[in-house]
Image (cartoon, rainbow, N blue to C red; front, side, top):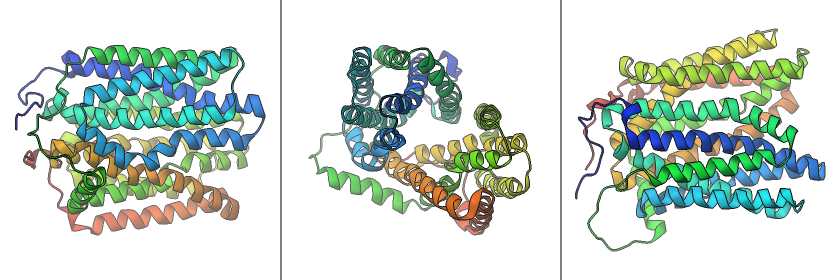
Length: 417
């Protein structure tokens, strides 16, 4: 087996790594474009139909691939050429967005075809993300992986912070503009990807092709036997049950406190800015703090934040506390991803990501459903009390686990063959 990983002794800063900067810069614009239309799609459906239910269907269709495609997509990406997968994903998304632009321009938009388009767009996102994640160690030297992961985190967080307001502003000027913006963002991502070098995976000896189910099972079994990764993925999924739904709870709580829509917007912007700052600090923190400090410390900080939110009387104070709790999220994610890169062999990278994301991201819709039910029965403050109890129990559980307390540093783990 010939290794094609990035040279381990390459000490160039990432901004001088041509392939990484091409991929990263193209995806900055592409990710902002995707966030722009994430807001524009429901706004378009509401303008056409006036139905919140149908607008909700669009969001459901766009995220449905997260639940149904991560496992098979992971197995397929581990079979295929990763650069070609990324090119195909961005190319298909550009074509889909071109169809939406034509439909909006000629006033031919209907909900049913739009649901198909957004589902396919979400499917392309899953395939691109898995291929990019598996290819990263072939673009970036192993010592620089935490920095690259943190920069990708900053890319996602910055897109969240800028994309949705930009989507609303563009839609306000003209219904067509957000979709034209997204079309050009995908085209730019495709063009920059063309100039990234090929060979983003190991050359593997020819072997009989097994069934897709057998390859999916191999990835699941491998992840299950990695106790540290298994525990970290389960903890992250449990945290997402709370953090992913916290925005809705904060909005309801702020409304109870008499906040205006503009003040709620400021409240929600504070955590986004803090998370971006945390992403830039993540490589420095990851080098200086042990993994157990990062994991257990983050959980206790989140638990303490939930307790504080129960008693705070001001929307801005709510936003400030959530901003503090958002600071460790990027370094927590960098630790989890760094362990996966250190432990998983190259041939299982995409399947490992797919299996982990099924749990971690699959918790997001479940958390949203639970939040809606608790808000209906307990109210916003009661829901925050329930979240505080849950997070305290989760932090205590993590602190009691020997697997977390004795977690090695990533650089101490030998490279898997």
